[in-house]
Image (tube, each protein chain N blue to C red):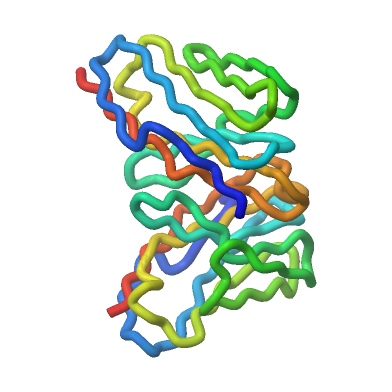
Length: 110
Length: 113
């Protein structure tokens, strides 16, 4: 069945270093969403990508959607302690589904 | 504006007991969802409702039921709780269906003993 794999599961970085998390789907996606969940909190929507090859930026965050619409990435430049949390991708491929990746937990060491 | 509220915040439940998790949104969103979050497994969809009066099964529906009598409320019922249902449960809503931004509630931490 539909699966969205996300790697790495954990990432520890020194403050100021860059961070990237990757999502891969077994099927072509109609769109992909990204969410951030702070420790003890709930997922909060970051962005949605729809077009093949799409790239969107939010300040230090860069989101990409692959040409085949089967993979996506989130890159954070110069991490800050406020970036701490778990980042989830969520892929949609049919009318009534949204499959979340397992998440990447980011720890930023000051 | 509260957004989405969930109750209770946490609950410890004996196996075999019936439990209803409550979810209410004040954004007049058409679609609502229930997810469970387990360590290492991310968020998995239990049930969803695209509009009041309709519901559908998600990825892990067994042991759970939902109803959507009106736009605002989407309760999740565990008819006879089992320890494997120990999890954090999140309710979410979106303006219209899965292709839109989902707004999540604060979650309910459920422990079944």
